[in-house]
Image (tube, rainbow, N blue to C red):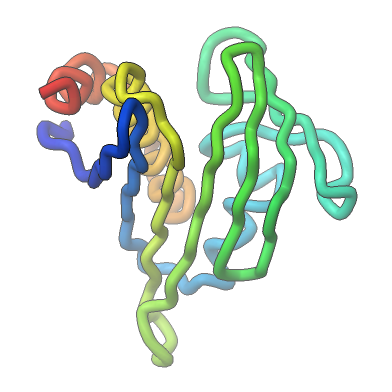
Length: 164
């Protein structure tokens, strides 16, 4: 059960940039489908409809209750190392970025996944950061084909820690 936040928060005014990292045993080329292919993305986050080559898709969340959907504008997709999107739903827009950094030239060196949410309102930070901690641990579990983490292990403990 995570007890301390792993994210770094860089405040600027009433907003902040949240960055979280996860280390995985898979190389960037093996991680990439979990970020960009609907079937693999659906194992830990959500599935999308539409043609990514058009620059826009509609994402349906699979890990949460209800039928939350978001319009996703693909700003940059440079396989297998960088994905930047603008996600828009009824609560507003989120600027999200993922970088995958290979651990080295040797096979099996693994990689680091660096997730950033830009311009996150500070008032929403505790809840949103807790959600991203959970989602990124779900990503790690999906890549490793391991059991998914339980939301109750994250909330409210990490929310309270981020609120401090």
